[in-house]
Image (cartoon, rainbow, N blue to C red; front, top):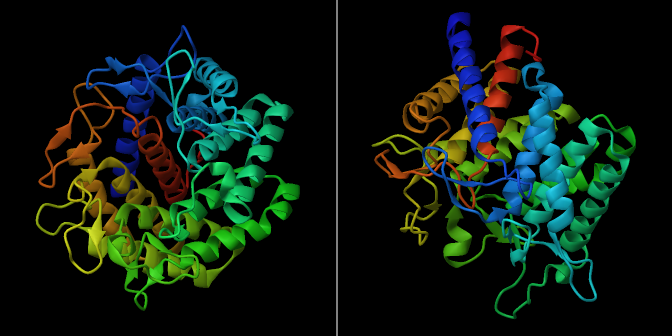
Length: 404
């Protein structure tokens, strides 16, 4: 593909990132209580004041990362908003629990009262991402120490004693290796160790463990990536064991590829492309209507998830990152062809030309099913992270500086 086409990609992606950032700067800030509104309608109207901790943490991280790494986003309003969000999280995210360190809430009221707690690790994971990135832009060593403390708590819950999660272990429900857990921990390892040799040493074994846990999800002689396997890396019975999530596998693919590039592991790079990108892409792409299915059953049964056939924003974001990253390092033309295929579908279906930002939920046929721009699971994260990373990768491919 010629340089002109890559420049067209970059121009479109850069402009779209600017529009997305402007949308959230304009509509999401709670200037009274701090933090961010995330339930935002088509035109920017706030339709629910609940604040979801996953999305609070993600928005703090994204603002800080843009502020730290992209010159045009090194703006006071972005830093001030990130600081406000971090303060809200530190003040309200943690729910005390007798006899334990407590947990982060999943959902808070507008003024910070706990509404719901999930028995998973993910609120804490995005809390770590937020605190660490905010510490990088503010120089707050106490905040960095807080991120490391919670990281170590997460590792304890996952690898030593999960009782702190508050989930009752029932005899008919054996422990499962859900791909989301090692993926998220690997993401945090890469976050915490960037530019920090001491922490790279501390978390080296954890990173290796995460990679091996993710690789257990390659099943059926390499022809399927399954979302859940046993703790021993074996296929599970029933719908849970047959579940495929193509977008999640593609996200795991670029996590693994990025790790492999840093480690100089050529074999892992090949596995990331061939198994975690190509396999789920070929299985997950809708040949009739285009786009990636949300869920699939490896044996061809109808998935039990009601939204299985919908086309969601974030799997397409992850596919764009995965294929452009892989092409950047390998220069294999087929990978750029995949990127182009996903790009064409994504940019012709998800962005809202009238009000900015992206719709998140489409029907199988590609029409908008849900008109809001933000909700309990869609905030300022997957879209801007995708656009940011793709812009940086295209800068690198085109030989330009990455700080414009």
